[in-house]
Image 1 (tube, one colour):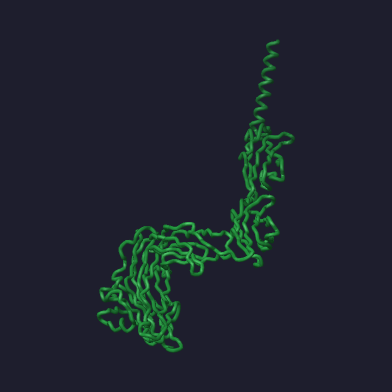
Image 2: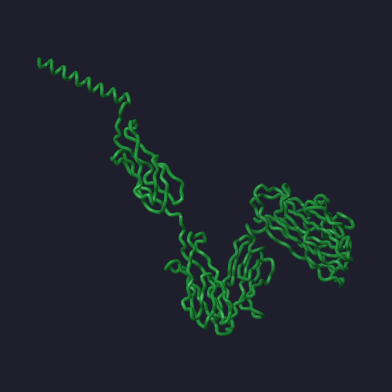
Length: 487
C-alpha cells in the first residue's frame, strides 16, 4: 500500500512540472533575470544630438520589458523613457534602468565640453614707442587660438603715471618712462606689451635684420624679416623696405618677403638716405630647373609666323569681352619685323633689336597671336618673353590695359595667367622716345586638374584718344618667348 502511495505522489509531481513547463513554452510569463545597457561608457559633447542606449534582456523573451529610466545628474545629461540620452553640460552622470524598485543596470555618461580655451594673446607693435603729447595708439591683438570660445579680456597699465590704456587697447602717453600694457582673462595674464614714452626725439642709431641670407623657392609661403632697433625706444622706427632687383621677390613695408621668380636680389631697409641693413635672397625655380622650350619658333628667327595662330576678329572680341573699339583698319595681321629688312623702323625709334627678327603686333589696328602647347595637369611651367611698346605717331604714347599676355586653357577658354603689358614709353617728343626699352616678363603657372592644352597668347587693342580719335598708333614687339616645364 505504501508503495502504491509513493508511485501516485511521484506521478502527481511529474505531471505538475510538465504543466509548468508547458506554460513557460506557451509564453504566458517569463520573468526578467537581468538587463544590460550598451554602449558603456557613453561619451558625448555639449551640443551633440541625442544618443540611444540599447538594452539586452536576459532571458531575451522576458515577458515584461517595461523599464524606468533615470539620470543621476540631469544637469549633466537627461534620458527619456525610451533610452534617448541628451548631453547638457560638461561632467559625468549615470543613466540607471529599473523595473519596479529593482535596479537592473547603469551606464556612465561622460559629457565633454565643446568650448575652446584661450591660451594667450600677442600684442603689436611690441614694444611700442611714444612721445609725450602723441595721440593715442591702438594695440592690435592676436588671439591664440583664433577660434577661442571666450575672448572677453581686460586691459591694464602697470603704471598709470606713464601710460593709460582703455578697454579697446588705446594707449595714451602721460609722462616719460616705461610701463607695460597687460591683458588678462579673469586673474590670468595672457600677454603684455612694453611701452616706452619719450620726453623728446631719440634718434635711431641702427636697425638690424633677423637674417642676412634667405633661400626660397617660387611658390613658397612668404617669410617675415624681423628688425631689432638700437636704441629700442628710438622715436622714429619707420623704415623703407626695398629690393635691389625687381621681379625676384616682393617685400612689404612690414618685412614680408614673397618669392616671385628665380634669381638673386637683396632686401634693403633704410630711413631717409641712410641704409641700415640688407639681406641677400636667392630664389630657386619651383619643382626644379626649366626643361626645354615647348614653343616652336619662340624667337621668331625663322622669319615667319607659321607655328603661331593669327587671331580672328571673333577670337579677339572673345578675349576683349565685347565688340572691339573703332580702329582705322580694324583687325590687322601681325607680321615678322627683321632688322635687316627694315633697319629704319628700329633706328627711327631708337630700338636695339633682340635678334634679327621679332614678332610685330602693329598699330593702328587690333591684333593677336597665340600658340597651343600640350601640358600635364599638376605640373608647374615657367613662362618668359621680352616685349617693348612702340608708336607710329610721336604724339601717342599711352597703351591700354587691354593689351595683355595670357596663358589659357585651350579647351574651356579659362584664363590660367594674365599679365597686362601696357608698358608706357617715355613722353612724346624726341625720336629716341618712340619706343620703350625691352622688358623681360617671367613667371610660373601651375596647371590645374583637367587641363591638357594651353594657349600662349598676346593681344593688342588699339584705342582712339583726343588727338587721334580713330587710333593712337601703339603697337608691340615680342621676342624670345619660352614656355618650359619645371623638372
